[in-house]
Length: 212
Ligand SMILES: O=C(NCCO)c1cc(-c2ccc(F)cc2)cc(O)c1O
Ligand SMILES: [Mg+2]
Image 1 (cartoon, rainbow, N blue to C red):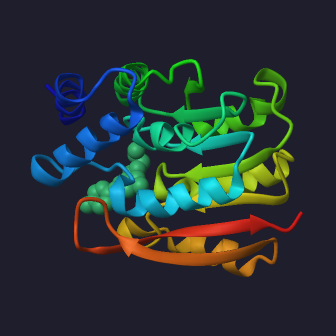
Image 2 (cartoon, rainbow, N blue to C red):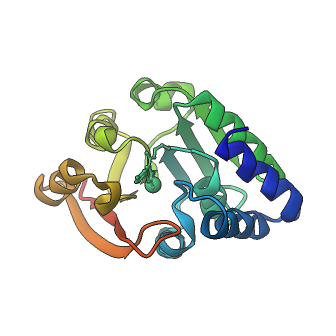
């Protein structure tokens, strides 16, 4: 059984079906007490919550579903009318996420796409009926953060004021991305220091507002 399957089993046996907060609490408890996993987690998650509440996005994209933790974390704060799309490359992780999201009762609120983000981003307008995104959360492979934010720009999926949040700026690090958003002139970018998931190590989120 994979680690991700062990986390899902723990959630199914310890959280309440249809209760997103209990699902998040169970994943976090498992992450702290039993097995580390690369969810954004409860500490950085509180900063992400604040960004989501401040932005109140009607249309949002996540790159890097993993087990669905951040999708559940975000969508639990959004109205039923909001549109949330999440992209995962790894089909095993996408399958775990699908069950985790269903257990949380949010399967009708989240559109899961299992594919390479480089292939999906150019399809979002026509195939997924997207105009532009109000918010984007980037948490997939650190070495493709820059490729994908540039793809979002060139596919006209960002608009003046779109809030782009990126995980793991320090650990494992996304230095090329941080440099790009801070120096390209297209974003007002701020770094929010925090802790690495389920750890006392340092990490942080970058929040970059597109100037349009
Ligand atoms: O690759 C990541 N995500 C995309 C796949 O879903 C990722 C990795 C790590 C991490 C792993 C191993 C280590 F030693 C340090 C960091 C942490 C994260 O928060 C992440 O999002
Ligand atoms: Mg991460």
